[in-house]
Length: 115
Length: 112
Image (cartoon, rainbow over all chains, first blue to last red; front, side, top):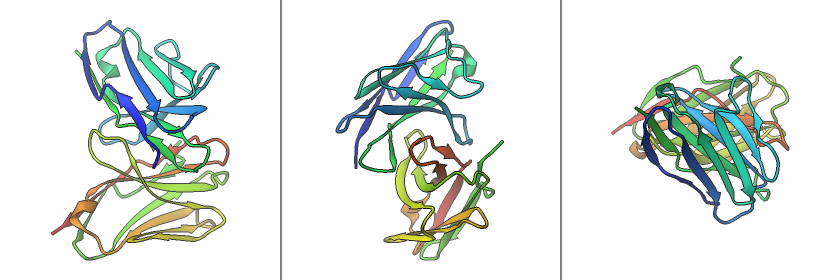
């Protein structure tokens, strides 16, 4: 299947700093990527839809100034958590859809811990 | 408003027996459904999918059944193996959007 690479897999940062997470589709061009967040023992919640060359579409309740998404190329989307706080600590996962298939492919996820 | 629900948070099954994981949805616009398997601290791995024009799809030990009138789908794993122990998520989306809505997950434990 298609490969989506996400890194870092784990990051610890101090409150008030910003953290960037990268998501790359390695073997196909992804015009659309998605960012999810998962709290312990809960479902994956869609945060935003990342569109190549245009602004991301955020789900209700997600602060777009807090979670900056950039999709500058067909193979790379980035999520930047700005001015991180402990409550931002979570597991963040990206996915990309291959136009040739229906299923989406997920990155390995990033465990963010804000101390 | 939870559009996709998995009402059983956990399930334990003996090795060799059948595992049945259930999922209900409320949005009649969904026309594609998928099951993903997830280990802790990893991204989900695709298992099997079904479009709304079908009522059954089979792939090896995995079979997904869809009952559109009841807005219900299920994943059958037979025979269950200890390596199947993981959290299983069902997901749904409307064609053309790829905007997955996930259920809350069911933790499957297959006992040796």
